[in-house]
Each structure stands twice: as C-alpha cells, then as structure tokens.
Length: 145
Image 1 (cartoon, rainbow, N blue to C red):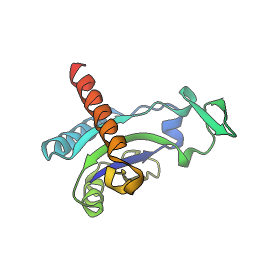
Image 2 (cartoon, rainbow, N blue to C red; image 1 turned 60 degrees about the horizontal axis):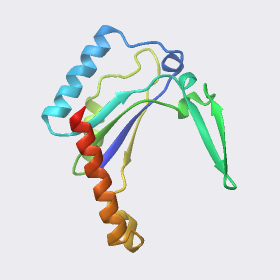
Image 3 (cartoon, rainbow, N blue to C red; image 1 turned 90 degrees about the horizontal axis):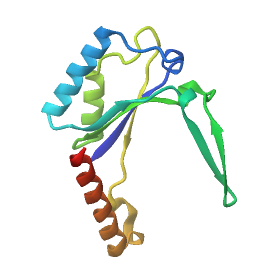
C-alpha cells in the first residue's frame, strides 16, 4: 500500500520561516532511515501558499486565485509518499518522525493512495493499460533527471 504523509502548515511555515540546522539534520536522518528501510518513494517541503495559486472548477469554467490562503491549518507544508503494508505501519513511522514544527502545534495526516484495484470495473483493462504506460513514462523521465 502507498500512503501520502501530509505535514500540515503552521503560521511559521506560511510566513516562510525556514527550519534550523538541527531540524534539517534530524529530518535528514529520518529520511535516511525511511530510504534504508525501503519505505520512502518521494518527499519534499512546499513553499508557503503565498507563492502558489488555486484553480477552482465550477459549471465547466475555472477561476484562479493567487495565494496566500487563509485557512493555515488546512494547508500543506510538506509531504512524503511511503510504501508500507498497513496504516498501522505508517502510524508507527510517523510517531518516530522529528517534530516538524518546533515551537508550534504540528499535525501530520496519513492518507492511503488509491491503487488500480480500488476503482473497480469502471477502470477498464484499456484504461489500466494507459495508466501503466503513463507511469512507465514518468519513471523513465525521473531516472533521466
């Protein structure tokens, strides 16, 4: 099973406050443990929402809103993609994580990622084959860079 591990934003992260050397070192060590255990597939920190935008779709039209966005607790400051056997394993790894937002109340959310079999019969063999082709292209591009 794959999981997205979502590090929620805080007022500090939204203000662009960068982690100190001690936190960067602790997170680096934690990331090394994840990689050595074969758990981590991807992960990165995100710039504050002031550097982003939202695109809203409604009635066949779209509108763009530039950041920053007000609801800080609902924003994402960073993420990992992990491959594990269960939600409990993901919880156990998150409990080992260094505090991502020292001095603030931090929250990390764990969400399972849909797999092909989750979509049922609507995800036809043709659609599955096309999805597999796209994933192969993505993997190929990632290994070039």
